[in-house]
Length: 491
Image (tube, rainbow, N blue to C red; front, side):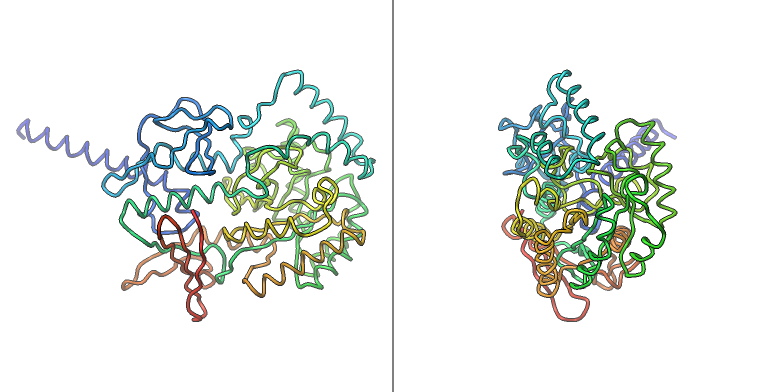
């Protein structure tokens, strides 16, 4: 074989190998967009242009859309501030493939897993951190015997200044959805398209999903559960009850069976609710072995930690289908942060269902509001994004008539939305089943038509994302033959 020919063959092999590597890279960067929309994989391919910054930081992606991670061509801001560069226009298309100055998968993961937290508000001096740890340990040692009125004083002092935090955005944060929608706009522009098919977010074309959960913290709450189920049933709503398996109150099998028999769900709520589950890795693993045993004993599929304490990177030790411990916005929670998304998402094999509304305890005892107005505002904002509207309602804190009236107003409003705007009110286990099934679905073309393949495809709806003047409109093809439903979504 002539040397020149050998050189050409070698060059061709090298080019093909580079192309395969490029395709692999594109697929990895596609992941967040493709999994969110479940659209054809060739829609969301990206390349990262330029050398990424050595250190992560904050930057904007247009307007008030905040990202955290490494970026090219600019130096990201070390801390959240007005000095954050805006990279909204720092992209271009190369042969219909968008080139971005950051890795979209990384920045979305950084938000969902709260990896930005320490850079929003630095924790201060070592002495201050030590003092907070001592106060934290002392508080949780006496918390079980403190009345709500005394706890509120400590909690308000601890949370002082949190209301002024600029990120995540209150009262709900949809940064992840805003980033994904902007990426979809860029992909459509780069390919010269004005529409793309995808699998709608919820079954039967539901406009959003609502979930009610009840964390049972003490004996008072446990004894109120039967009456609370009566209230829920009055409105045709089923909920999950998160049970503390040790120390707080007896958990007889008859109590659990009464919940299951009425069509409600039983989940695990921490181990003993002492606030120390995530304090140290070895102790966490010891407790998790017991938590997993209780999960199997109770037939529980889901878990929530006490006080929404969390370390997402440790979740793999939990033997549950789903976790419900990460808030969307955590300004009013003891652990700051927030996942900045309104949709369920996978952390390894566990499905995370974020808490997307203000807890009842915070509403009543920290904000001192006995009305549904804040909840209505949050519901409206989440509906605009077609996300998950999830509530924590404690039987311990709504036993009194004043709080019960507010909760009944909430249930009445949700059931009104169910009949007028097609909100799906579901149990957490039902959301888990659907989201896992949707993650396995895919779109295929048959005779020029898009079809959905995969488990539970009969419940799924084909939808279209339409691009008009940098704005995305969603259109659903209803499975019942009633035509289409159009939703407007701003990017």
